Length: 326
Image (cartoon, rainbow, N blue to C red; front, side):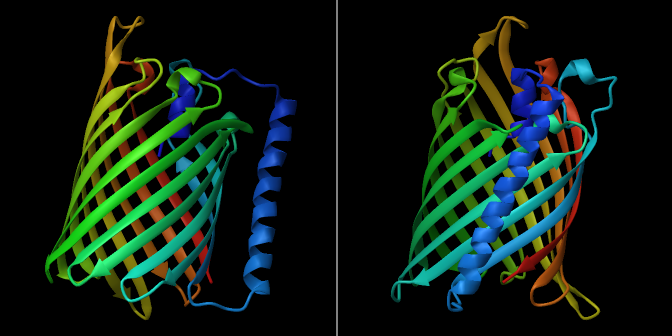
């Protein structure tokens, strides 16, 4: 997904009066409460179904670099946010080989100082899957809609077919394509489409309790203004491990990511096309307190190297939350 905070900063959104911000923040809260209430009514008024899943999470996040505008370098870039998340999913088995799943997620982020970066993201997913012996294939359709500071920001549609093969109990390989379309409400010059091709390799050490994943991806993103069009090469590694502490069960994921971006259009400010190198290291952990409750935490470091000043910085993120699952 697009980093809404960084994108907004790079494009230089206009500041708004404090009175209008309070109105927008109230709209954020009202939308989340309405969706939350509707979901609870839908879940608890319907008969229990094993395929139905509801997730709620409340978290606190610290970000060392919320505002990436170079003009704010002496103003203190770090901030704390409260994050609310709601997820609703349903899985259905059509027959022996076919399955259908769908989900909806709402994420709402409210920053205490940089409230012009308050954001809300709605993500809907529909997936049709087929599996027979060692071969599995699926196709997913995603629609996402995001707003920043109470204004429409991004709309995204993505179609993702995938094909996987279980080589043996220890190795699994998967190929996936992503065809997407992005529409920016305030920045028409960024509207465009993208294509990405990914190859995944899984090494199971203890089935799904302990495994390593490697991913390689190439991506072409087009835009109405070629200043925002780019080609990218992305490499990811992930180590997933389940563990136990006393009578509690937990799971951790250690992730590493590198992305090389080469933009197409020449920027007049630097008299060259933008070039980025992006590095990321993250640790995510879940601790199961009971069947329904768990504590979540994440540590993430990003290093952005770019010949564009506003995109050249380091970023640290820390989040801890409490999640409930039905």
